[in-house]
Image (tube, rainbow, N blue to C red; front, side, top):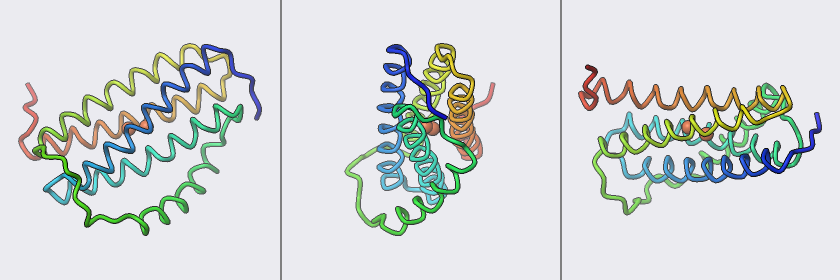
Length: 159
Ligand SMILES: [Fe+2]
Ligand SMILES: [Fe+2]
């Protein structure tokens, strides 16, 4: 479905686009920087979903409301190719502990989820809202994966 974006909708989407780009960069770099394999896997899995998000935001920016089901299938194929091309032996040049990496990722996901909330409330089109809501839910899932990892490693003290 085609929509025409208001100026505000476009500006908010541009912000979300830069957030998604940074999330891809963070997860890709942190996958290399992390010491623990389980954390590397979480970073890899989340980076793939962030690529899907960027794809959906780009579609919205071009006035298309993506069909989420169809989108996921296309992205799975794309991501498999990207995984095959990824060079995981490279070092990141980042010197952070796994706990610091997790804390930064958790802060990032929290912020991005909040920014989606603000964006959703400004949208006129229900289909576009649904797409943004779907993405926001996945950001919360990313946060949950990191939270649960931290909790299991004693990095997060639940009070
Ligand atoms: Fe995302
Ligand atoms: Fe995320």
